[in-house]
Length: 312
Image 1: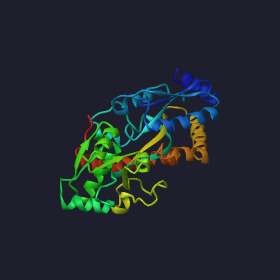
Image 2: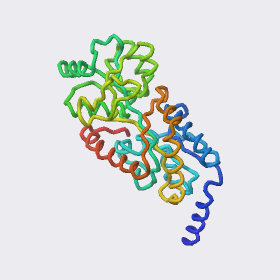
Image 3: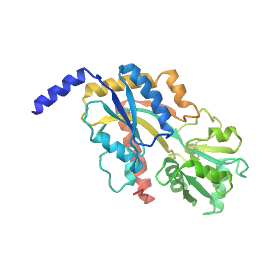
């Protein structure tokens, strides 16, 4: 029976794809990364000559939809929009999750990362990140900052910075960036870490003091990275495409080839790096993507442990 099953799967793989492909988005409709995902899905549909349909399955901090893909039939017709919240470092902050982020998936390709921006109100007295942190050191515990919630990339970036430089800042968690921005503009917050600041900057309402990516962002070439201030301080959200673990290699290899070609086109990179989308393209093949995830685990495991960070 096992031999027959393998033979059938091999035959199906050779004809792949012959029907619609579901790309599971483990967040509710409207999430910022969905714009990037739709750009990718449309072009993958054209390349494979089959519809690639995004299906939103939110819940449990993105782990619900991720678990459904982990347990899906490994035939290449159910794929995952993989995020840091459900693969790494997100699972490190749960006491228990129903899947293994490494063993239960084949991670096909990394599309890009989303840096966080340290923003302050435009009339804030600190004109640079160095000035802001000087105030934190001079008046420990008096400077507050907001993120979109405990466990988010903005929160982790600040936590890593605090641990690295022994800073005492007060974290105020929000359920999302909108209310945090409102309170920042209202003078109730000193700074916010957010993945999107372009419209606020254009309107002259906020200033960007730093970015949490490894390198400076082209949209803000004069804004330093936290890495320049404190080596090793990086924190980004990321988006990749993954499949259930036992998906035939011939299928994942086809998907990897098509996705890398799509993601490396000038047109797609331009769309993804648009400030409204906010992604920094960072295309990694399956081998490099797995190494990236393993590196994320090594970086964040001690930070999460030392900070006793839990989201469940």
